[in-house]
Image (cartoon, rainbow, N blue to C red; front, side, top):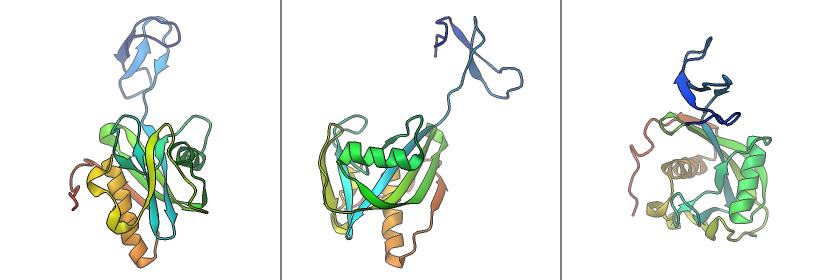
Length: 185
């Protein structure tokens, strides 16, 4: 950040009085500009035993598969944001959503919140954010074409939980999302 969004003057990185971290502070009006982690919200949509995935039409990772997810907007709850993202990316509405997973990824300043939910009917389709939307059986998931390591992590967790029938809320700090990522056949 080079300029204050309040007055347009230059900013410097300093530790404001009473704080303990470097912040961008305006050299003119003393406004403090906080840069906090981004919250990404998403849905793990299920229809019967199939999982709905979207092929990205936008960067990053254009052309790769993902769960419908995106940045939480101001003024909405995590569930509202996740359901909005499901509609925006897959033209799909879900029922019976429940909190499923929370992944903290401090290395990239992101927090992921996923809800597990059902498609009431197999009504979905591509949007301006996805070129394809499809239901996948476990054996057909395009593991080597997933857009983000956290998507692989949540899918693997869900498939393990589905075998036991227990879906406890997962909370994990991911220090390096690429570590342990397996290449799949």
